[in-house]
Image (cartoon, rainbow, N blue to C red; front, side):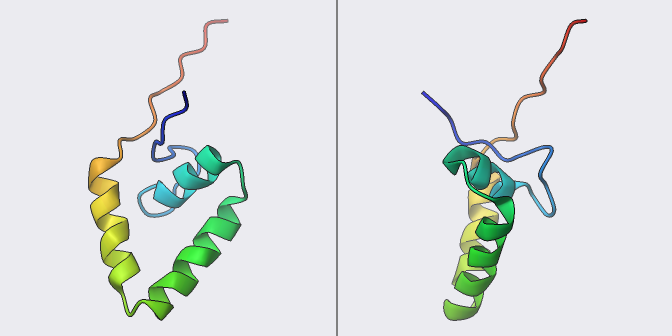
Length: 67
């Protein structure tokens, strides 16, 4: 079972859009574009939900590679 995390590698503000894109297997640019459009259409409600979700969705764990 896959779990939603905020991205560490694909992060601009909090990594939430990057994490959603990785979880869904789609482009990060597409998710960010949809978030911007939703923010304008919802008069800022999407921005509030973005930051609330960022509080509850954990950062992705660090990957430890052994060579």
